[in-house]
Image (cartoon, rainbow, N blue to C red; front, side, top):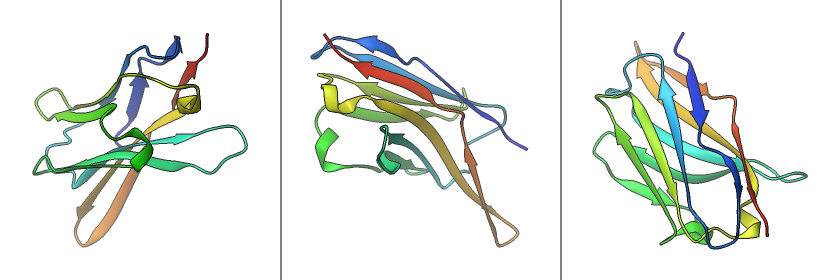
Amino acid sequence: QVQLVESGGGLVQPGGSLRLSCAASGSIASWNVMGWYRQAPGKQRELVAGINTAGSTNYTDSVKRRLNISRDNDQNTVYLQMNNLKPEDTAGYYCHGKTYASYKKYEYWGQGTKVTVSS
């Protein structure tokens, strides 16, 4: 069972930056998709950014040009660089990984890290 552990959340002022990290307990090199989701109080969890094995990325419209997702397969870590943060970015951020083996899909979630954007 692979575990995902997020870190890097905290309190930041509007316009500030944070870098979230998601460390996997095993190899992620073959994982099809790694992503970051977020969930604000009273709202549904939403996909923020995703990256596949080829390095192709996708972002939800509200974070384009402000957030950047990357993966380091050697370090088994996925990052989310967050710039120009806004109060509406306040949420719990969750790392997600998806892979296939023996024709079965496996999905993993981290426990989340909290990001608060406030002056």
